[in-house]
Length: 391
Length: 168
Image (cartoon, rainbow over all chains, first blue to last red; front, side, top):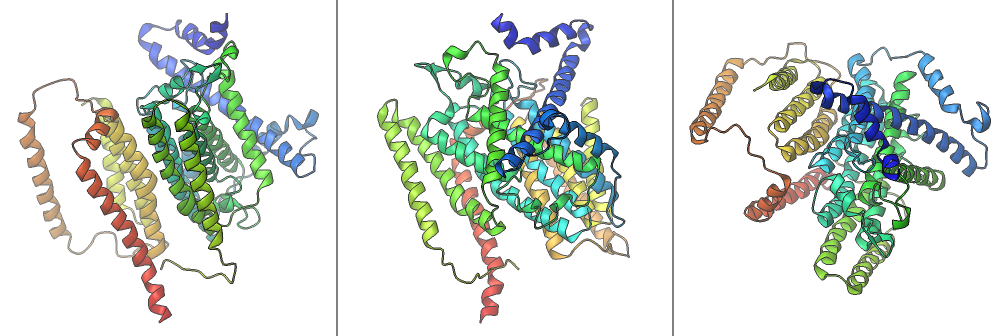
């Protein structure tokens, strides 16, 4: 009974596919999986949008949307109807083809990332050996669509927002990949399915999640920072800062194309949270060995929604970082810390089991963090600003 | 050489041709991105997973953006040239391109009789690539790393040079 609830989607798919002739079965299975992903993740997007507006409202001491349905629950439906019926305004000088293709490309690439996430036991759409690399390849392609959006609008503010966004995303690709490389090193495989299976073991009832190791915790913090910057979320949302650049690279988009950009951004958030839970939080494995009776996909979605809640919480709490501050932070602090994390993970592995490696690795990380942080703060002379431009 | 190969090959060639023939420079850069993606699909068809995904990650994700930034920061792409996209010395270019193609084709055809006729493609899994990089090819890896570091530092120095000149 427990196994049936756990594998219910796989059993459903096999049952439906059983009605078709044998030659069509694999293709139909894949198509059903794709339909599942396209149905589930936009639904999660609707829930996240609602959570964000209500949550931000509460953190800012106001109610958030509360008119459309009890406690504003039907607000996403109202938003969808509005964006579908709005007029689609394209500027006269805009490059029509590229302007049209940019949101399409963003949504396509955002959905591709979900194909390799293991949502439950045996529940991954495509099981590639190098699935982590595939995920990052799709993530890197998002930058092209942002640039296309900003440039095709023929609007100086859009272009500026697009350049900032692309520069930020390229800078934070490096910490994102480096903090994931630590996990690959520890697991010995690039396959996300194998990474989750390695974390699915329990010692004294506690799981072997990667976040419960010193290098895993440091990696998780850096992954969270880099992930927030990759999806242009506050406090790294200067490219779409509402008070600076109107809406940055999607200023000139209205109606359904704006909704597609919005969808693409939140899908990116869900995707990065999904990868973060797979790499660091154990994917679909339960937090305690005793809780294994709950279906694995429920754990995965709970962890993803928890990450979304943390994203929203951080957005409502921290002020926005200026562009040069965020670049400095990426190149001068986070990247050296990720390199140190690689070293610490290697040390962890070669020191063998026991309490000594916990002490050495944790103290090394904390020491460098404190020293580097203090040195970084000390050299700040808060006088008049001087700029060095790259000509 | 099945049907998917011809589709992907047509896409790559179309992207490459569009990159040469289009008027607007940024459109050319985007067409080049399509050609890169086509190459990545060709790698994936040959079961070279690592090469294919890294091609997308590096070329589409970084090199295409770099090309576009270079266009935007140096000349601007708003006004297309009025004289057409072909240069005056196209005959010399054609001869040189034909010569390079002939050399490459000769090199590829030379190596074919050496391979045993096998239907299964040789797979190089990521693990084998990693082991080779860390074992047999570790010296080229280190040299490439120092080369990239030198390029990075050189780029920063070249960009900073102008400010120091003006300050004098």
